[in-house]
Image (cartoon, rainbow, N blue to C red; front, side, top):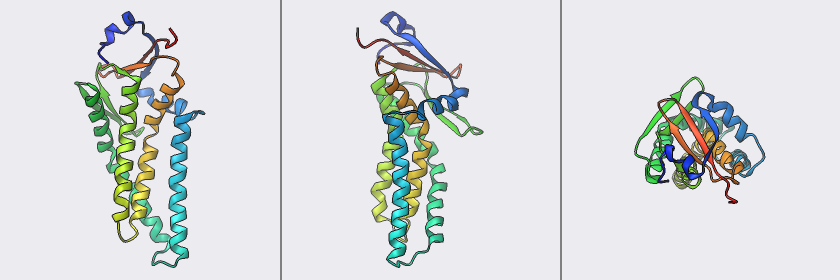
Amino acid sequence: MNLSPEELESNGYKLIETLEHKELVPFVKRYLYRYGFWPLGYLAFLLLMLLTIGALAGYMIAMKQSIHFQDILGKTFIGFALSFLLIPLHEYIHAIAYRVCGAREVSYDADLKKMVFMAIAHRFVAGAKEFRVVAIAPFAAISILAFAVTPFLGGHYIFTAMGLIFMHAAFCGGDFAMLSYLDLHKDKEVVTWDDNENKVTYFYGKSTTG
């Protein structure tokens, strides 16, 4: 969006919410644990992955393939562990999406105690469409890539891939909470920008009904 933060109010936008980055976890819980398209889609994907892992395990054991439950569990947990290594890539994909949308300055922040990681586009005003692209990009890119390589994995490492996809998707809760926020305020033309110096994200909006 070709507006600076200072130009928002003169263009009809009003501040609707201020999010201090230290309060990100309560924000995520508020908008992820509600009835809506994005929260339901998020939970449905996680449930589908668990059911897929369980069904595949049951099929392989029933067909008496050379695998035991302990092996399945072990390989799945390898995927869980590997998903933590994807965190830098996840945030880098956010950064790429921000830059594609026009952001010039992108940095990173983390709160290891809360397991919170952020890509921050300082003073870049993102419209709802742009922010949706930024929010969904890591989930889409990593999930599609992991699904694509799964058929080529041998030695029952398909469970490692499935475990990785599941756990990475679980880590995307914050992204889906942001999508849920935009969906909840779809009656407004929502824009957002980050103030990296003060560790705050601002949400502005104006009525779409005139």
